[in-house]
Length: 81
Image (cartoon, rainbow, N blue to C red; front, top):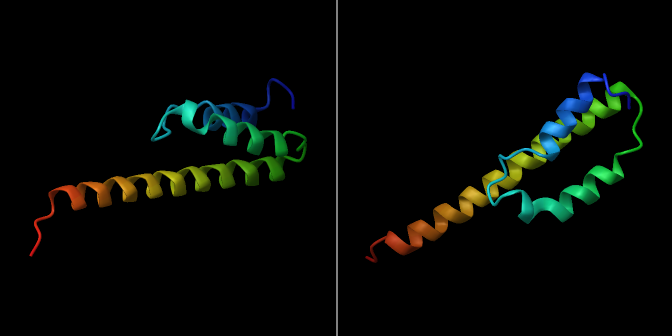
């Protein structure tokens, strides 16, 4: 991928994003493996599909994290009947 490719910056933004709920260190190994699997892509459409998939997975992980946190808080503060 050429350095001037705008998709390159989108990929870096996802990979190095600070928006991970448990921090980058928690997801580092899984991220590396997933990004290495797609590192050979050359077609612009395939790269865009990979970016969309990464965004989707990130949102799913965040949703699961917040659900887990919600359940823990509810269990802690919910009054028994």
